[in-house]
Amino acid sequence: MAVKFKRIAYSVKRIEKHNLLLSKLFAKRYSLNAHSRGFSLIELMVVTGIVVVITSVVLTNNNKYGGSVLLQNLAYDIALSIRQAQVYGISVRGFGANNFSVGYGMHFDKNLNNNKNYVLFADLENTGIFNPSHDPTENVSPSPYQIGRGYYIADLCAPAGTKLASNSYSCASVSQLDIVYKRPEPDAAIRIPGTSALQDSARILVASPRGDVLSIVVDATGQISVQ
Image: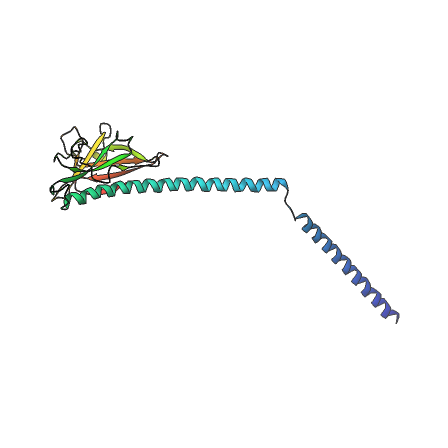
């Protein structure tokens, strides 16, 4: 009987000890939860700084990517305008009432509206060069085309007579450039006003406000590409 009571007393002590440990564990967990309910001022400042840095990086890269896309779109728009002149020139497209033998071309001038305009024209005088004072006007609607958002024609380049070595181009003396197409050939007659020699190729450089540059290359064979 005494042994039985000793066992009961021992079991009661074990239960009390177990309950004491559980109470301490719950008290510690409650204390941790109580301390983790809020953030300190330093923690909030650190998190805010990280968010600001990440946002700045994302916005900077997005603006750079958007600018390169707009520049590429501009380059392809100019290339398509030159292609439009080629289609007009080799097709039976009349200018005015009865003139169906006229050639069509693109005129680029670095002094035209601060490098922001280029002109689709009909070569009414058959000179291969745009004449802005011709009456009636040689402009083909909707030209002159206008370049906006701070983008512009940075330079006009052409080799003298034939393409230079390593596909290099001379831009120092080129302020104007005319590219004309006329039936029946799809070839381009590329001229620098004021010179008599036909050019084998030409390069129109367009730039963004950030200084990025792309070029439209036109070959006398009729090929047009963006590089």
